[in-house]
Length: 297
Length: 183
Image (cartoon, rainbow over the protein chains, first blue to last red):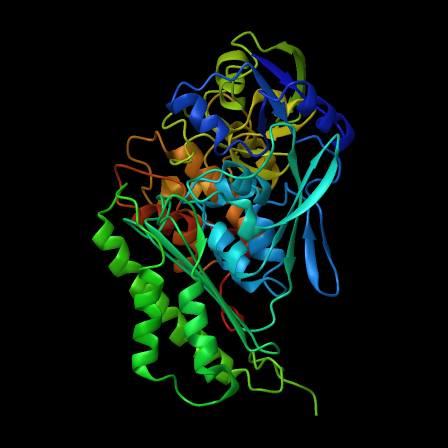
């Protein structure tokens, strides 16, 4: 086994192009486990942990531009105001030790169906930058995951950035596993409301072969025009939202029966829609967050 | 590949990763440097027994490639006791056997609350608890439980471990309430 240690994206992309069989590794929380547990012995490891600046983020007027090595701890603790939904998802990953090492780019690159960031990256409308010696392209999260599993990342490409829009309203994330923490999710759900655009986005992970948007459920809410009002959500609408969410895609049987996953997703979707709506009302319609901070007169 | 790493303040250079470039930092620490405080248990980042600091960041050393630690500074449980040898001389802390150093307050609290049973998880627990108290000097019971979630103990049932962390916090940061101790 050989370990390549590029110091820059220029070097990293050149190495990736020359040795497309090399396994990229950053935080090691997936690759090292695979090497131990599944006796995965790649001939070449492409260690990205020395690529200068790849662990940094930049907060822009509309979005946060994350280097792919931004770790879960950073997202959870430094970006929770800009990206509250992604911070919830990142904070739910593994343990502190794992969150300190696991990265946003690694979560995307490994693309385990159970990866905790996927549904929120979909619901937040994130874009992923894929680069090679040929150039760079931005792919929306919607188009990043392949339906049957895996991603559109080319053999000579690396994930060089992730751009996540600033939250424009309430965001919710919840996951279910056999216990509260440190266990593979059996169903994870993410939801964002856009206060200005009156839009909703919802997605599910750890469910089918790939994380997916729940388009029919989103459409139900948008067509009901409840997001233009300020009243309570009709119970029938909430239940239908859950039902449509749970029938959007076929659950896998890994770790839990399909029926369990369907039921879990219907409950998670309905519950989180209700909670997001309560946040939507509490924050008011003037766009100001009433987050308990005292405002000076 | 030659690896240079500074462990607990001492630099070790030209460490050849003889087990192959895929070896972990945990392997390097235990098998090459003889630091057996970090324990080899699950080797998949679930139990926290191998917790160390890599450039000041708490990590599971089983998930770090030794090549990734090249040029870095590592602190292990072995580096804790001597950190505080001075101030603790007067506070009744236990001596570290065979040295002039005193135990770190977290180590002392683990002894005082009986938070050690078989002891296998203890080094990882102590390291993680110390990391927690360096970031959050006065954690609540719930915060301790959440922050220590990545460290598994199969003996104690955790109650004494939580008590140890809270006791260490009190000793290191002073009484919780600002009212306590006022005239």
